[in-house]
Image 1 (cartoon, rainbow, N blue to C red):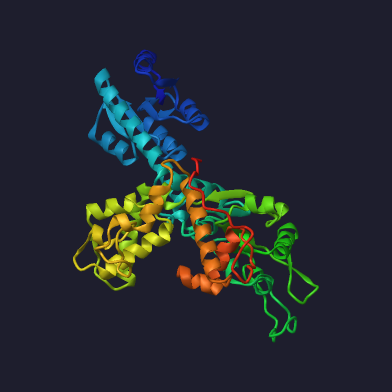
Image 2: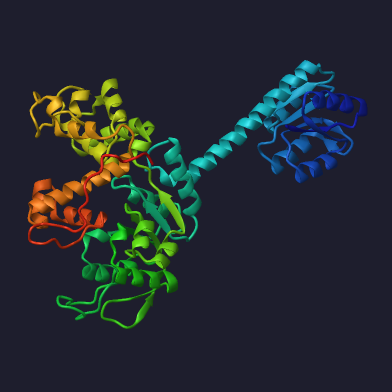
Length: 487
């Protein structure tokens, strides 16, 4: 409810004006002197001040200046019984919202009050929006304004200014590193280094040295002392991607760093203090890994102080048009190709696609279409998705009825858990490739058109044994179910 202060020593006019505005639904405070008005403005917020020009202890213009000093956005309306051009010009020059001459009509007062209250509301809304923009500006690279991404940005805005360790979860390609960078930019460490390490890219022995550094001669090939990522990120932020791939011994060392903020280089007994904010990311379910003993429970509760989950693209299709626009512009700049647009049908096709590869897959599709499409507009046929024939795959004349993927899908029950079904299908495909490849990961990778590292990663992801017998058999093999129920 708007709050209005009326300042006038003429009692009848002041009370009549106050009664009218109160009847209109405003909260009215009355004063007879300039000093009373200044004290009132200093003690409580008002949406409007209506003051007479002639007061027992001063002029309305003097009160106007005092009100502007207290709150530059506070509108002030000057009332006078003798109107002159000079007075009106001076009042407006000093920032008065409006100027009314006594006697005034109720309609004239109501019109001025309505405009003043509206302006105050707009100014306050603009301040809120500017504050919100400043608060979320550091997350500008996280594209998407849908509910899912809005929740992510809100969570990042809350945690970024703190010193808390952050755990970012989400499927591959959902933008976990972008979220980590947003946390860093929104923190007091934004001017300090942000360093990112992919834990899955190093074997355990090398990752130990990479993170904590090593002394000269500490192992074969250590021909010089080398600081690690923790020391390099001192004062800033260290982002450990795919932290769920770390071995238990390395997890123990990481826990010690989080506990005492000191690191020990490989081959050294001396500890060094480090001031590093840690952000971890993983596509794995760490709680499940804790249950199986593959991830330390005490470390989990130290790193999951503030969890941030990056939603998969299939759960936020409303953000796809914005992502497409950004990727089209980026492709034109980076690939040196003409800027193209998508036809409505092509955009609808993308919005209906589940994107198992998430944002990374969407960007790949956009870049490929920008290179291969012939016309100025990219159409649906430029996106070979699902059962479409790809340029390097089956011919366009292949019958959908003969597509093994379609046959497999049709054999599944009508209601199922998509995520669980896809995971189990992936697991069965890896098992088949390992069995047909004689238990050799390199051969399985060739059959699946993957790298050997990808196959090893997926074997660990699904909790499958690292070693297979010479026939390629695994004791963990289980038939792919076709009766998966809903979540």
